[in-house]
Image (cartoon, rainbow, N blue to C red):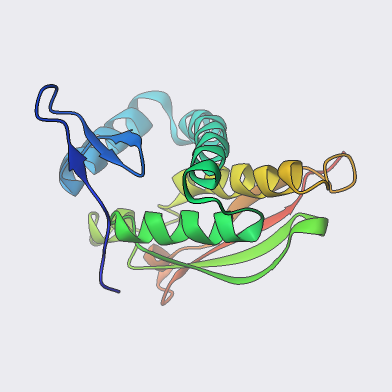
Length: 177
């Protein structure tokens, strides 16, 4: 994949933007070191819950802004989201299958930044992404007229490359009522 990510830098403020959204650009080791320090301080379960909610909210917001910026809608926004995540170095994401009406999707992640930055560490290292996919799926349904008909989404990492697999897998499914 050739990343063709537009980055604009404001000469007066130094603020970087991509697709009209302000961005931060940090080395992978810096982000991962901060991520693992917070995980150790709070405990994985508590931190994962915080990340899930924050990631959900951020993905929902991002989808809304990008849909307007590019004049796209529905699953095209979700696909664009994964393309941009891939272009920003988080890993290579791909929707294997998706059915928004049932709040279901199967997403593969190859070359996860969390796995690459922590060689030899085992377990499900990529849980930070889970809330992102639920937020994106709910945005798709909320803006497609399915709101009220499609169930709310939840997402979880069901397989990680750090467990010895070729790639990570996330499943989006309906939130249990």
